[in-house]
Picture 1 (spheres, helix red, strand yellow):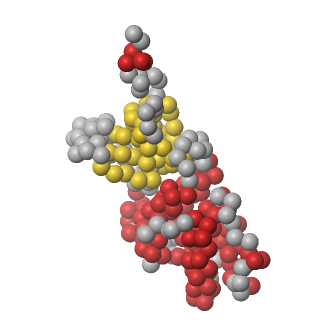
Picture 2: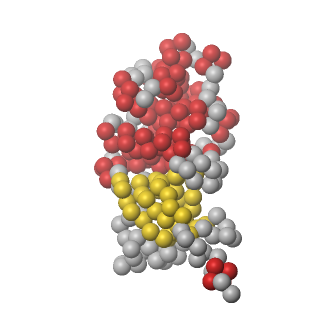
Picture 3: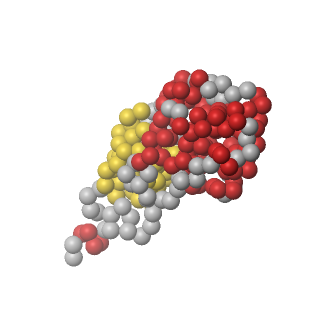
Length: 223
């Protein structure tokens, strides 16, 4: 009998690049890794023995690491087996400020909530990767969260129609700029306290209506 029939995961592993959105314990020695990849979308893999002292995964699997990896597909579930990992960018500077980690974690949770597993997401992968590059070079202000939320809404086809809002003209202009501007332009957007409150109130109603209940860590990301 062919070995591929005896072992459903014995075929050649698939290769991908991606960013780690989340990790969690499976057993005392193994981890479940949630990935965001451009071509394969969100993937979930198990890293068997990753917590063992001599594991080949040691130092390669942590939040927001950008990696090249290979995995063996499961024929029974969406949980695949991680084979090899090369960490290309550990985004180490993110660990220097809790605010950056909180904002990146909220963005990751929002992506998980609003996208389907194993569906190509090149634009959203690029959006998240650009956020990770932006964060450690600028103070973790609420406008970063607002910009990410609005840009994600656009990618999901849920972009607000600015002309239909009841926002003041100045805040309408701010909303449009947050959607359309590059990350490099974001520091130049300096909303007044009144504009920030108005935009926060608008998004507090708009986001749940279109995306469902928001991740609990949004408040921490905005604080």
